[in-house]
Amino acid sequence: MSISTALQGLDIYMRTTDETGAVTFSQHRVWDVQRFVRARQDEAAKLNERKGSTKAGAQQVTREQYVARSL
Image (cartoon, rainbow, N blue to C red):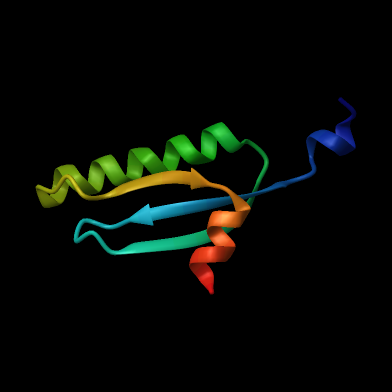
């Protein structure tokens, strides 16, 4: 992998649920997909712990799921 390839961001799509169960879909350009997704999941776990909830979460979705949900 060349340096220019390594520094190129990848577009990913996320489904995020807050502690009330409200869902949002978002697009992100990231360098390290696994690290980004893990960070979002950790944030959701901390939110659940603070709020006494089990609803918050984060998961990567496909572009098709993102587009279908965003219409």
